[in-house]
Length: 115
Image (cartoon, rainbow, N blue to C red; front, side, top):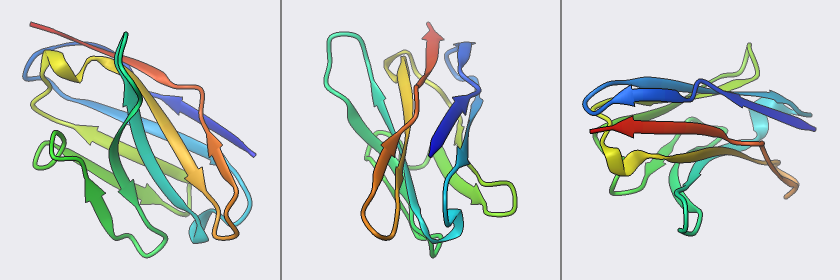
């Protein structure tokens, strides 16, 4: 099981980024995925999740600006982030939850939003 997150970088406030999480996992289509983030000196927090049935949930801070999606043919989960704010600066982590309960975290990708 391996999760490879990518797409982070430096962007100005108001800009956009799309994060990707490529998953080398069993039964990708039946798994749930989520994005979390951790800012320096803060605890890791939930950002968005998508179920195997494509239902989505968002943190209040992400609602209306971020969109989580999945491509089962590519074994990849995405997080489209628009209208970025400096407070979105964090390392973003992809989380995999298998339908039998196994959990795996990716290595994280850094997003820096300048004001």
